[in-house]
Amino acid sequence: MKKFVPVLKKTKLFAGVGEDEIAAMLSCLGARLRKYKKGEYVLQQGGYLADMLVLAEGSLHIQRDDYWGNRSILGHIGIGEIFGEAYVAPGSGVLLNDVVALEDSSVFFFDVKRVITTCSSACRFHTAVVQNLFFAISEKNRGLVQKLDFMSRRTTREKLIAYLSAEAKKQNSPYITIPFNRQQLADYLSVDRSAMSNELCKMRDDGLLEFEKNRFKLR
Amino acid sequence: MKKFVPVLKKTKLFAGVGEDEIAAMLSCLGARLRKYKKGEYVLQQGGYLADMLVLAEGSLHIQRDDYWGNRSILGHIGIGEIFGEAYVAPGSGVLLNDVVALEDSSVFFFDVKRVITTCSSACRFHTAVVQNLFFAISEKNRGLVQKLDFMSRRTTREKLIAYLSAEAKKQNSPYITIPFNRQQLADYLSVDRSAMSNELCKMRDDGLLEFEKNRFKLR
DNA sequence: ACCTTTCTGTTGCAAAAACAACCGAATCGT
DNA sequence: ACGATTCGGTTGTTTTTGCAACAGAAAGGT
Image (cartoon, rainbow over the protein chains, first blue to last red):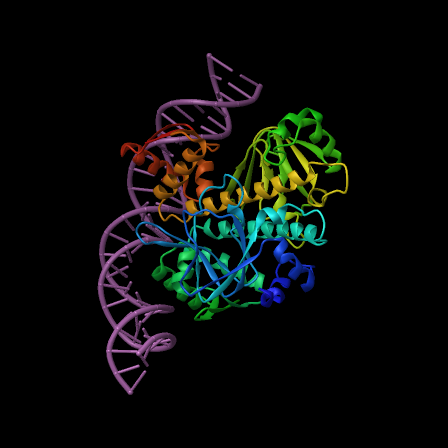
């Protein structure tokens, strides 16, 4: 686990906390590390969860397949991101989505009860972590609202523009790389892949953007 | 403000805290109360927010109008619900939605910094409130994910079924009352009102449900 | 009680999306 | 280097949606 302390230091959860303190807090927070092979499920729909998770290595997708195999992608998880925390609350019910490893990945499990119950002594930085957690969840919340904004658009073109614009703003550049291939992007925006592919080319013909694979340039 | 202490006692935020303690905490948390007339804006898109809000009286809609007047309803806020908390975090940017009073309403404003910074002495229940806040945000988070689930459905019928089923589960009965009229429901699900109205009637003809105004019975 | 406004359902038409099938190019594994 | 698989783009058809206009019912105000 020690190996990943520098990674944790860069996360929102441990912002402002030094590496030594993080190393010391790991046991205090009941940290465990699990590794997953590409394609393996980190969490499964219908299951229960008692821990808060942080991705240390690799990348993940939060997604859901219905009875007919139609897939819906809720989001992408990159290194340092928190997930699963919303299902720890009492009475939160079963998980609504799968979380699957896109490549070989490592995940930290933290005992949330020990995170949000400030321990009496030792951890001077515990309060900071609680605040960081609040801010991180808030950020995730805003992200979900933003995704709802994409999805509330009526046409595929509007959805693409809303998503790509938000991404350009987030990456602070008109040149953006997205964590999806075409099928995944279609599943993320809940549209048909071929129709979306078609629309992307029309948008290129209209001079709205250029692209190659998963790299886009907006104008 | 004292008048609303019994209301606050029933909220998720103050779960497990007695009325006396709540009354004592109000100043500790920097509470203020504001009243709004029907139709008035509690929060406005593009603005900034430094407080966490709790609805004490009335009801609100979180919504957004675009340049052409198309409205999108993000959600409904009932008595005791928390809102606005996601925009208090540093670097969270401007508000993405309006919050408008559907009827004469009263709203508590709390200084979030004082909520998440456990005060040294006095408030024995402060830690409980921090945990409650975490659980409340988690619940809101799950609600947003569920709404994304509605919106990811391809047809109006599927969206309606997903929404009404979730509502029936929440209200724990096949007889449900929704906080929307037809236009509002359409704006909530991001579909055309007339098409939705049409679809609802077809679903009734197909024996899937019955309805009258904003009361539905599912089978 | 009357008029006005809002709400809901209905219809026809045009636009868009879903779906299915196909093809060439790139990628992967051995 | 080879075949198999994945990926992205294209096209045509069917289904669904969005839009506009309208009408009766209900609700609200004076």
